[in-house]
Image (cartoon, rainbow, N blue to C red; front, top):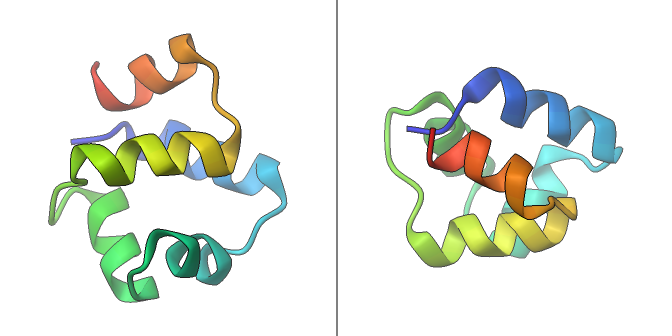
Amino acid sequence: MPDRERLEERIQDSGLKKEFIAQKLGMSLNSLNNKISGRTSFLIGEAFKLKEILNLDEDVFNDIFLN
């Protein structure tokens, strides 16, 4: 389960809308919100794509997804 607080913070800092991020990930906004909240899990490919979209460095990515 991702660190929801840190992920939400990074999304907000990016200036990107969740709708845009969801579209880039090929999922609905509802699906993205479920994954962020931990109700469902990110697939590894989705997590890495999100890393690219949000321009996360390795340390931040690891803290959010592998903590």
